[in-house]
Length: 181
Image 1 (cartoon, rainbow, N blue to C red):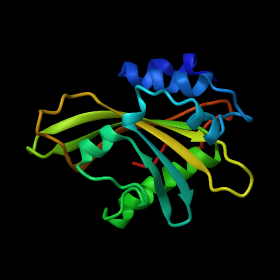
Image 2 (image 1 turned 180 degrees about the vertical axis):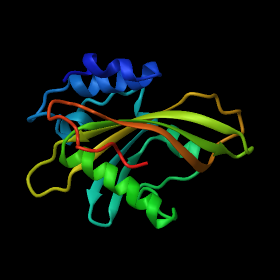
Image 3 (image 1 turned 135 degrees about the vertical axis):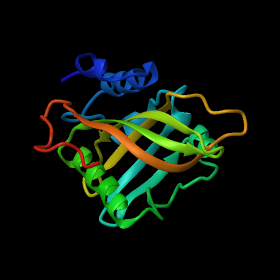
Image 4 (image 1 turned 45 degrees about the horizontal axis):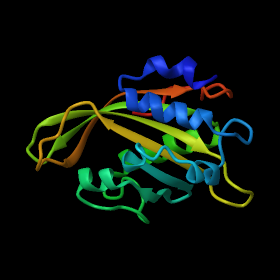
């Protein structure tokens, strides 16, 4: 399935654009190689992106865009996504990320976070697989768009709740059950 066929599931134009860019790149099988993506990134969108490796211990962040660092008020490059979360929530992140990388498929997520002012703000994210050379761990590229505007001195504080997560068929179908919530 092409980006054009699944774009209608997105609320934000930037998530659509990120998927379209990913889909426009040359592919090895169903997905672009990590090096292809990094050689030709969607420059305007990369500040809101994170590159992760799928390891047995979790999703290790290898790149965190500058806007994400600013929004989170910390850089977690080199750390595991979700470190510090309760084990059940950490396991959900790992399960869904592993499914995206190994099925392969994409995932769209709507969610809520609490900001530093205590306000609930909404986001949309897309998670897509990247091919890798033999012997390398699977990789993912994630893009996040705030559906609500954060104030000048406001930033992400705590993850609150996942709204809707759906698999995106990139040509290999989707996993049997829905993404874990």
